[in-house]
Length: 207
Image 1 (tube, one colour):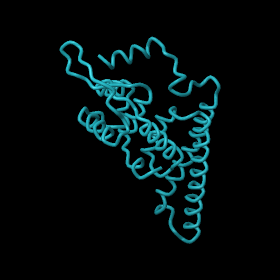
Image 2 (image 1 turned 90 degrees about the horizontal axis):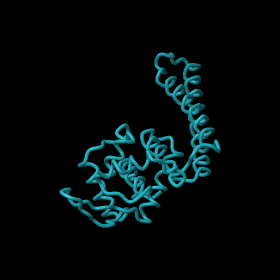
Image 3 (image 1 turned 180 degrees about the horizontal axis):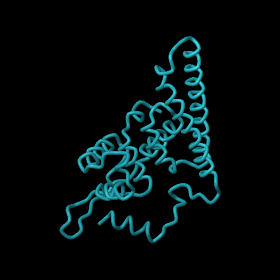
C-alpha cells in the first residue's frame, strides 16, 4: 500500500466504496451513509463529506460525471469512481483487514470487505487470525514471566485485559469466517439482490 493510499481517511474510504456501488451525487452519499448507520464509524456532517469529495477529486480518485437540476433543487454534481480510486479502495481494505495495529481502521475495512472477492477476504482474515494469536501468546507469556520474576499481578491488570480482548477477537473472527464461508451468505455488491427495499432506499437517498 502506497503512502498516499495509507493516508486516506475512513470517510474517504466509505465514499469511494459508495461509488464502487454506483455513481452518486454528494447528497445521496450522505443520505445513504445515514440510512446505513455509518455515523457509528465516521462523522457524518455535510461539511466533512463535501470537503472529502473535493479532496478525492483533486487526487483523481473520483471524477465529475455530470450535473443536473430538478425543479427548485440546487444543481447537483454526480461523481463516478476512477480506476485509480477503485485500486486505492481495494488496496486500503486489503491492508487493514489483515493488520491488527488499528482497530478503528479495521472496523471500516470490515464494513467494506464485501468489495473484495470472498476467497481473498477469507485469506486476509486468516492472516489476521495468525497475527492475533501471536499477540495473544506474547501477552500471556509476558504476564506469566513478569509474575514469575516477582511482579505483582495488580500491576499487570491491563496486560491481562488485553489478552482477554485478543482471545475474544479471535473467537469472533472464527465465527465471522464461518459466516462468510457459508454458501447461502450473499457476498459482494454485484450479488446483492435488487429488492424493492434496496431500490426504495436508493430513491429516498436521491430525493
